[in-house]
Length: 385
Length: 140
Ligand SMILES: [Zn+2]
Image (tube, rainbow over all chains, first blue to last red):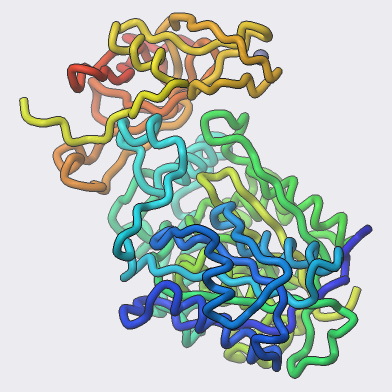
């Protein structure tokens, strides 16, 4: 069956983002869940599905059950998902699958972590990626380096310039400056990005995302009940995933899993890139936004550099991207807040008026992670398809 | 020479032959005995044909730079004296890519497409790391 339009998002919850030293890692999840369930006009007994992810700063077994028990939820469907920064978007898709197959009726998807003040919680080790033996002895350390490979290849293959990556950072910062719940709100210029210190060439510091504490959650339920809730429902039109070989095995570092994932989502939803009023693109690093916009068909492969310049991806431009400020400037909650922001844009009257996309009807959300390997796409709409 | 502080490969059942061959300064890579495809890192199943039989073949040691990065941020005391240092993806003649370092030249001078040759760095009694230096001249 095509699950297009079968489910809606009826509640969203966000914590403050930034530094939350007074809260535990479990505590941030619970705050986001409490807010999302309340936003949907529901209580703990109304929730029968829960999707979570082991926080990388506090890994533990069957985290979804820990969270469910603490939140008073007794689910008939619960599990942890683990595909890096693609996880929140994939959670929404998995929630739809669980609902349409009858496993449960109302799912909370939650992601929270304390990367700023929480690493590492006492008594826990860190989650390994599995390829450390072939990376760390050579000093390949940290997320920026693997992603810098994408930037380096994009520059080599297509002549992309540092100024063009910087345009992404400038747009995200402008949007964050309009968001009360954003960490970095002082506007920046292309020159500021180029003059920030090198982290790993070709990335400057301002090409790289923030490190944050915080959490987000959404409530997904059947579209049959869409009007039983206090806020306007947002319909799930389409979704897809595309997970590719690792950076050593992949035939390209400038086309990632977003191509396959978005093609699947467009097909399910019956829409095209030009139908989108905005895009929430996983922006761990500036170059990933550019490559994802290409993979999503907003411009041809290799044309992302000039395409993102001159305000096209800013509010008021052709395709506003990350209207909340993204991982680069709002805060890094692994993309869960890309989803909550998309829902708020489509509801209308839910964000500061200065960053509301005019008459937003359809938006696309990307999730990306696991050292370039994971990708998930979600298409959301204001109307029932 | 003080204690070596950087991370070392842990040598598991799948990849021990690789690290042993590097120790002998004659790096061998795993090659599928069925379809002939080289693979890296070493694994027990061929991702191309799912055969489990493998052989270990010495490599030519010639390759090209596929990506070159300059690491400017130190991820701990062990790296402080090294920054800025080069990290590259090297595409070997045999068709596989590996993470390594191009050494013997300033890190900024390493460019995509440069020809490189394999050298070994004996970092401990047990481990020699496969690294690369620029090949004298660049062939078209
Ligand atoms: Zn094979």
